Length: 150
Image 1 (tube, one colour):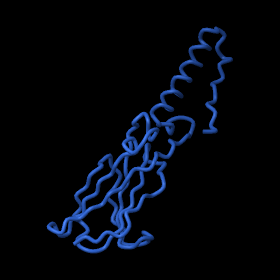
Image 2 (tube, one colour):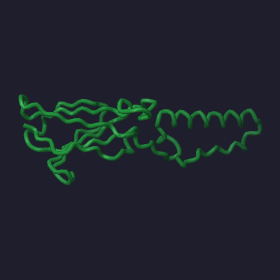
Image 3 (cartoon, rainbow, N blue to C red):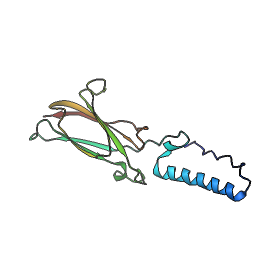
Image 4 (tube, helix red, strand yellow):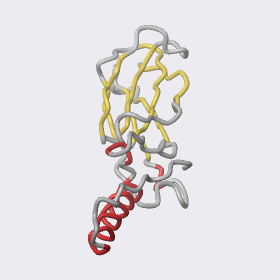
């Protein structure tokens, strides 16, 4: 990241010990933000985009009108994928067309990784998943391709 943490103007403190305390507090806040991926709280910074999660969609012909969504978080997909296991939220949507330019069903942003969807009824749908650490910065969409719900 090219962002540099600004240091507060500590010249107002005559005592060198007070200056050191202010500097150390600022460094600690910056370190906490870095470790937890919650950079959006100070300095106008945004959290980074999370690594891509895996989207799986299945149907069961014995359960008409149902689709089953399973999301695998990136830390379970390989090494150095979300190594600190920061909480990830997922935004799931469905549409009958691949471009997502109409008839979109939005399932909201949640920590859930499994969905039993019955709101769509029968038909062909594409599911799209985007993930975020902070609810503001999302990664690229992962799509399922056309899924036919019986």
